[in-house]
Amino acid sequence: MKKDIDWGSLSFAYVDTDYRYETRYKDGKWDEGGLTTDKMMQIHECAGVLQYAQTCFEGLKAYTTEDGRTVCFRPDLNAERMINSCQRLEMPTIDKDKFISAVKQVVKANEGFVPPFGSGATLYIRPYMYASGPVIGVKPADEYVFRIFTTPVGPYFKGGVKPITIRVSDFDRAAPNGTGHIKAGLNYAMSLHAIVDAHNQGFAENMYLDPATRTKVEETGGANFLFVTKDNTVVTPKSSSILPSITRRSLIYVAEHYLGLKVEEREILLDEVKDFAECGLCGTAAVISPVGKIVDHGKEICMPAGMEKMGPITQKLYDTLTGIQMGRIEAPEGWICEI
Image 1 (tube, rainbow, N blue to C red):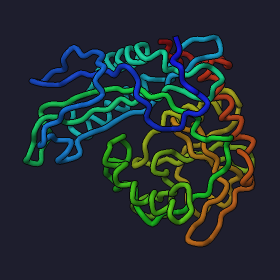
Image 2: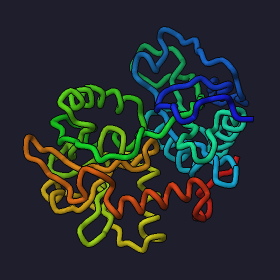
Image 3: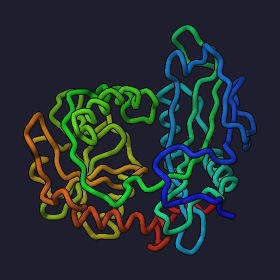
């Protein structure tokens, strides 16, 4: 039974739901874990997460398909990425099967909050882990908590998708051999000043360049770049310091195998951005946010696709991937996880 919610008025913001999942790590192992109704957590004043930012997270969504099923999109890749994040932060890993089982449990328990098909809304799922054990010396903690909460969210773009204007940032998002490739909370803390500054200057997002040479395109604070050339080749940046977006990887597969387009993952110089036909930012929240203009220290790079709507190739990519997610288009094997 769906909850009595005005699905059309939801924004991309937290809404309390009935259940969340929790499991705790102590004495070298995870407990059995299970659902809880308690959204509040007590935390030790010396917890590793508070002292040394030992925390990582994931983000994925549950949808109602056209034929009424509740599904998630590629949660196995979220599990794999979280394992990589945990290993880099010296945190205990969550077994892939346990991760997927926890996602299924919490979505099923909150099924009334999964928005109906056609509403434009989805159920956002946030798995996260943090160091709960006290630690005062700079070292990994010995106790951890893994939790998942869900929240129904509206479409990322209210009133339709409009291309955004972004700027080339003077800030670095990550160090050359740092933590840019994992979903660590500290990466996002470091991006907050840059995004607030960008908003204050009238820009929607930052384009971060590679921290070593500052000549190559990397990503924004929370999304990967995707470009389309004038001959319809889909190009994405290759770098060891950007997050491997699941949406971006899925769009690349769709471009090649569904739309028959040529795809390239390679280093992209800032100097060549002016030669592309289309630009988009891809991530879980919006799928693709079209970029109409990039401002590089006063110099405007206007994408030929313009400021009114998505470019034609970007639109096809968006329509195909969302069609797969919503069950209108047949998915590649293993992409759709039914709850």
